[in-house]
Structure formats: C-alpha cells, structure tokens
Image (cartoon, rainbow, N blue to C red):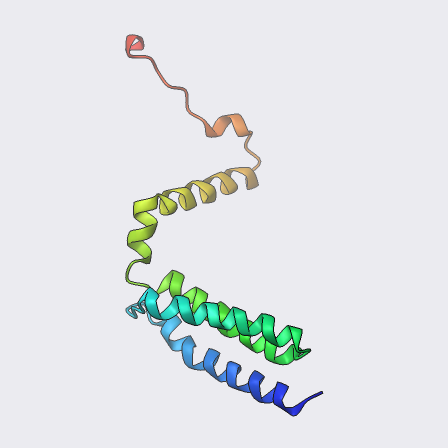
Length: 121
C-alpha cells in the first residue's frame, strides 16, 4: 500500500465535502462548462488510478466525479430547460406513474385509456 494512495483519496474526499453544500443549495447554479469537465476529469482519474493499482485513490476520484455529475444534473442553469425541451421531465413522470401502478398490482392494460372516436359523442 502506497502512502500516496491515501493522500489522493483524502484530497478527493475533501472535494466531495466541499461540493456537498453546492448540491444541497437549491438556488446554486453551476454552469455545465464547469461541471462537465470536472466530472470527466474525475472519471478519467478513476480509470488511471485503477490501472496503477491505487484502489483508494480511484474510489475517491469516482466519488468526486459522481458529485460533479449530480451537480451537473441538479444545479445547472440549463438542466430544467433541457429536461423540458427534450421531454425528459415528461418521460420521468410517466415512468414514475407506470412504476406506481405496477406496484399496486394493477394490470398493464388499465394504464391505457381508450380513444373515443368523434362519432361517439
């Protein structure tokens, strides 16, 4: 076990601690130009540390990359606009509703509503 492994793990752990308030603050806005490169660097470092046999450093870098991923998803000024523009928010609500119905044991056919033809009225 190399002492450097623990130093890198400690540094990554500190970055996760320092990023936590940003994730908890609902009014925080972090541009994607900041969060996406930081996220990518965290995951590249993870792979690099794994190839060097530095498991603890890799775990710390992965945690930092995951934290930046959450910040990109939750605290980007464009995240809500992107979700609305692409329909991801509607898709997420549909999936939640479908899972809720499945948990209650309702048959799949009941989740669909029949379309009445204009002549039925």
